Length: 111
Length: 114
Image 1 (cartoon, helix red, strand yellow):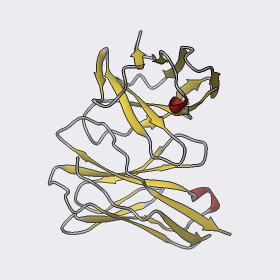
Image 2 (tube, helix red, strand yellow):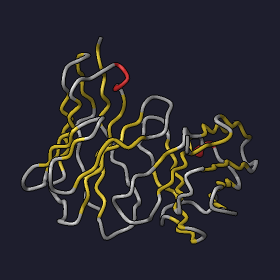
Image 3 (cartoon, helix red, strand yellow):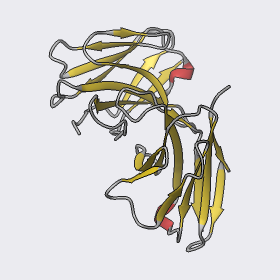
Image 4 (cartoon, chains in turn orange, cyan):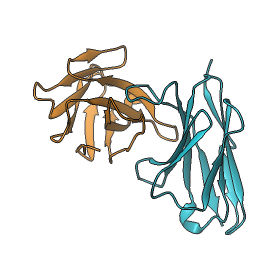
């Protein structure tokens, strides 16, 4: 499986936008880019996913570089409830839906 | 609300004493997964079921077994828990096995081995 690289931790102020980067230089043309987050003492939860085009949903936006070697998860207005570990995961669209999590980015949101 | 339920949330067992963790889902999803998450680490996939077909990850120890008696329930059996098996165990489901399908996670069971 293609590998992802994320910063270990990031900090943000409440109500400010947050850009969480993910590098995936070995991504293949058939890999989906998924983002999940894990709040303290909870199981991971789906945030967003995409293939080539930028994606928006009620939780976040996903910006995918033109060469697809990197992507950025954008939280438009961080709240204290967004403090979590954010995981960027690649999945081959032709393969099984098995997740191999990387180390993720721990987001701290300051009031 | 449809959901993934794990019981118990906290489980304490003794070294070498078999333990079973349970997961149930009301989503009617075909695929169920078990992950192990040790402290300050990312979740690690142990195995999954697609309907009744079982798929073990290559590096999952033989000490870990699983059963899926029906669509709604899946069990994780640890035959002889060691101290290194203390972890959070997460159950997840997805409607299909193909990539791109959202996975729904339960809250996890935290296992302590004394």
